[in-house]
Length: 154
Ligand code: FES
Ligand code: FES
Image (cartoon, rainbow, N blue to C red; front, side, top):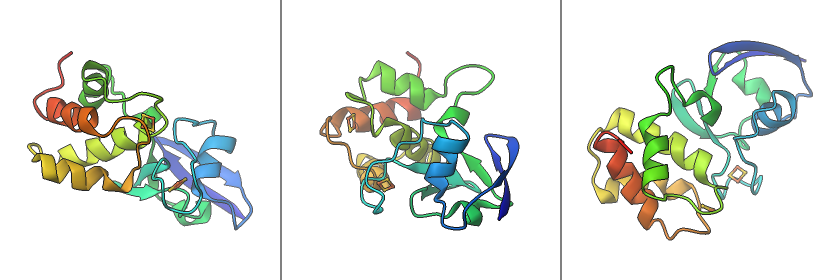
């Protein structure tokens, strides 16, 4: 079957198997390997992208379901004026170690701050609860998102 979707502002049309998952279309076909694939069972959250402005776990979305939709991945986070404040804040606050969860954390953080510019620590912890970090203990992730809420300057 044929599917046409917009990813990071660019339209793509592909011939796909109906069972293909969005995470695999993004990574294997479009080369957007910033979206990570950790479990395939909707547990780890490493595969979070936006679909029509909502965070989704792209291992739970069929690529066919993204037809006609707008998908945003971590590669689409950086704007014309440079890195997004959540990106500079994760750097400034050491919000990552191995980095495997980081793209999903960044996409989740950006979505949270777009909807709540001044989230509490509890709000942040709840927002990122769908993404598992095996490295950091979350302290610096929470600090980074608070830093981004305050402007994200390095
Ligand atoms: S790959 Fe783990 S939730 Fe999608
Ligand atoms: S930084 Fe390693 S899993 Fe989060």
